[in-house]
Length: 474
Image (cartoon, rainbow, N blue to C red; front, side, top):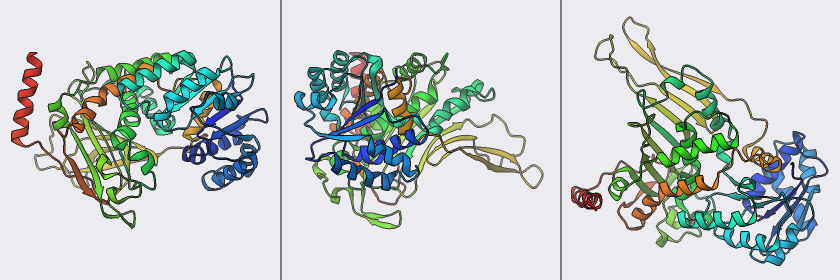
């Protein structure tokens, strides 16, 4: 059943203006929406419909210029506004009032999810309604479990859309396409042939006025716990029988369940955290993170996070998975890099500079490339080749694809409740060890390559090894 009513709580926020309104314009432009569709924005601002439409027009002029003027006008014409406290059942009930099923989008800080879901439960939703939540899903494993319990009292699991827009990106989808539709790849997609897979989202972008959100979250929760773990699932999953919701999501959960739990010793050896100091990046001076407006230096929020994981599975035993994300770095690097093992023997002499093959899925810009070794210009010499293909522009932006799935009721690209909990299980040992200071918070200059490699001191390593042996004995 297709839903034709969308209510967005947080309807005047950055997420709505930057992504949701342009996504709706894309759906209008592609013919997926018509004059029966209605948008209701709900927020704390004391606005009326005219004021909201004026604001929405301005957001579309800034972020929706890729779409025809008629499509943008259709979005604002479909919209009305309700002032609402998202924790007040009466306000919530007024915002979602109507006989037809409604899709309720919580474009809110995660801390407000439980109270808003509780208010929705008290208000009641028409049969067949759906609810959409942005990442991060809770603040920890306990929060995720409690939120899942609240949601189960509101709507069926199939009507819950825990969205992650990375899953709708063209290149992310192409990870599956390249693996499963090419006979040359799947037989070697295992630890026998692959030494390491890097999943990287390094950006030159600094805080850019997002301290209100980011300083309470940090790089690990903002990127690694959700976006990068989702990419890990697609890269490492066993081939599903179909790309339907059950088969696809079952295989993703299998990957998360197979992640080897990290002990304190593992966290010290396999993770890094850092934040940027003052420097020059992207052609301008960047202040230190602690000097950014709205930042509380006492929170010790990291802007760079890296973890190395291993999977306890037949396919991947012996392969390392490196997940990394950082802000205010010298270059943008957003890719999945599959690094193959070296060949066992070279008949070209020992002085050849031969690098292992690398298959790269570029995430932004979207591309696919492979690094190969070939014969050079002189006999018995080798040279490096890089073959790159740019991906076609998708018919819909990532948020457009996600909204269309919500309205049509297809949850295949949303995150199931048990999957959200398993993702927290993976990162909670890291969060705990970091909170206890086992891994120092390093610094790196803005515009640099990030923090240099760090190793535990011999004394601290011995202490952790002793603690590890005691825990295993117990």
